[in-house]
Structures are given as structure tokens and as C-alpha cells.
Image (tube, rainbow, N blue to C red):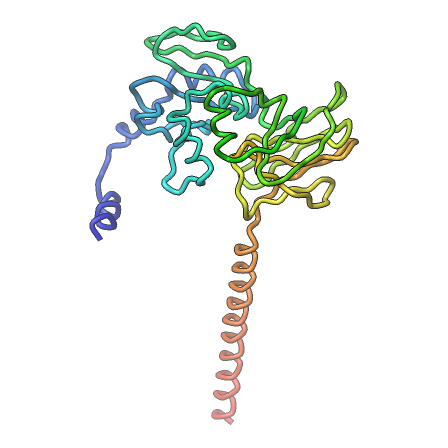
Length: 290
């Protein structure tokens, strides 16, 4: 009850527009990163110690600028993501950055780390491009079986290259190593629908750097549904046969479809009942007048 009152009371507090505009004033690192990208898919990570958008203060701040952040907070985050944070301790991990498509990092001091290229320096703000970042979707050379904790510890200790090996749980998968003709291109990337154009050189394993959700997400290769494997514990993977294909990931839970259809039927019955009631009432008045 206290929490409901506290949240509900926020709407009664008047705030000057200029205060809101100042709150969401675009930081210099956002302007720099956006100027370098033209509708490409990437993630960022702000590792500064202070300021909005950092891992310690309002980590969802960068969503205001439509930027995908590796460390955005949600109280209902998937268990597998929480497993990563529990084992790694924090998101400062180069293997995680590489496979999760973290292309840019924001720091408050200069660092000398292999693979990080300084692209901007300002007032206690340094933007680095992660030259080791993998695309959001790519083919993996090999698939191995491992337990969840084994996978998480391998990531924590930077013990494998996610481009070379992908790990799955509770299943054995045999795939072909992609050759030079294999390619993956993102055609459209949305919250509920992802469309890819792929060219596989054999039965290749496609890794998608998005959170694995056991229910709701489906994958299709040329409109034929295919199994989504939990990959590297928190991500998705599918097997794509040789050739050029259209790959589609779609989020459409059966519970939503059922509820939508039930609501449609019930609403239709209400409308039908209304028309029947009006018709009967009109007929009754007509009989009385006669």
C-alpha cells in the first residue's frame, strides 16, 4: 500500500519543462556514438563512476536516446541474465562484450586495453570503440556441450572465443564449419521481429546476441519453424542448412494469441448483444404503438 501511494503520488508533482529538458540533455558520448552509426545494430556500456547512464546511477538513462545498453536494469530481468551478473560480478568482461555486440565503451579515464580504440576524449569522458565486438548475429565455427556454470565460468575467465565456439546445454549438436562464402546480414531489427538474410555453406550454427526466452520466441528458416537453442546460457542459436535463406525470429506467445482471440469473441458477443437488444426494443415499441 505504501509503494502504491508513493508511485501514484508522482503524477501529482508539478515539474518545470526546463527541468525535464535539462535532465535529458544529450551527453557528449551519445552524440559522438550516434554520429558514427547509421541505423546499425550495436550496444554500449558506460563504465564511468558517476553520472546518469552509468552502471551505478540510472542505468536505463541511455534508452531515452534509443541506445541499447548492456547494463539496463529491470526488476523482472530473465534469470539467465542475472546468472551472468551473479557469476561475473559486473559487466566489465571482454568475452561478454565481444559476443553481446558491445561496440562502444564510455570511461572516465584513459586505459590501455588491447582491442579498445580511443575515438573521443572530452571532459572526463573517453569513448572507446571495441574492435573485437562481434555483430549481433553471426555464424559460429563449432558447437560444444557444457553445463550452465561451466559456460559462465568460461566467460568470467575469458577462456574461449565466442566466434570460434558456442556452448549449448543438455544437447549434442553437430554442425559444419562455415567457410568464406557464409554471411549474415540484418534486414530489420525490432523488439518483436528480427529478419536476417543468410548464406550458409553447410549446416551452420547461427548465433544471435539476444536474450534466450524459453516461451514466446520462435525462429523460422524460409517460413519453416526451427528449434531455438539456449546458447552460451543467455543467448539464442539455430542451425541453418546450406544455401541462401530468410531467417525470421518472432515473439508471439501463445498466451497472448489465446487471450486476444478470447477478448475478440467476447467483445463481438457484447456488440452483437447490443444490436439484438436495440432491435428487440425497437420491435417492442412498434408493437405497442400499433
